Amino acid sequence: MYTIKIHPTSRYLRIRIQPGGEVVVTVPKNVNSSVVEKFLQDKNNWIQKKVKLMEQYPKITKVVLSRKEIAALKIKALTFIEERLTHFNVKYGYKWNAITIRQQKTRWGSCSRKGNLNFNYKIALLPEHLADYIVVHELCHLGEFNHSKSFWNLVSRTIPDYKERRFETRDHVISKFK
Image (cartoon, rainbow, N blue to C red; front, side, top):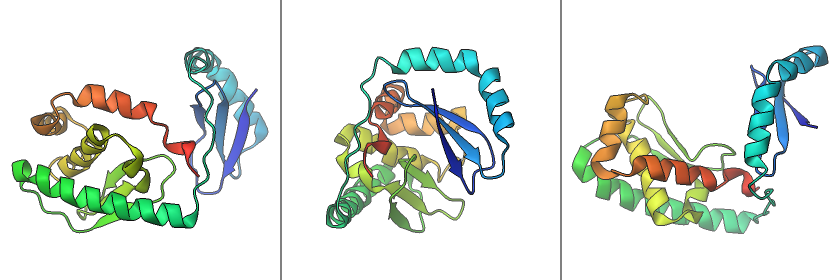
């Protein structure tokens, strides 16, 4: 059993296995159902393995926040991020253009080629050591705009246990909040 979400701007078929084992298929708007069925058949072994893995985690219960709560979290996130960027940038000396706090569904942060740093307001809900990892991760993209060995070497300058934090961050489901 699976849920299909038709996405107007999506260009590719995607499969996401949620905690609890729910299968969600994202489909671009003009894709025929037979194409979706063939895609799912081709990926069946992978899906079954991932469902088995994700069934061990509790199903996500959505938490709906008010606009006022989201606005307060955005302010808290911006304050935290500005302070932590200044703190960590002592080791790097990078320059960024703008910091934006967004309401993203699937990303904790991003960095544009123009030097804009974007963060999810939900970073304010993370434990500090994980939020620090995300801040350093995006800061290091100002020096290496990829995920090469050089990039991870930059991250490890200030977050030597970045692999553990990266894995732990995945346990904090971003889509829990609407």
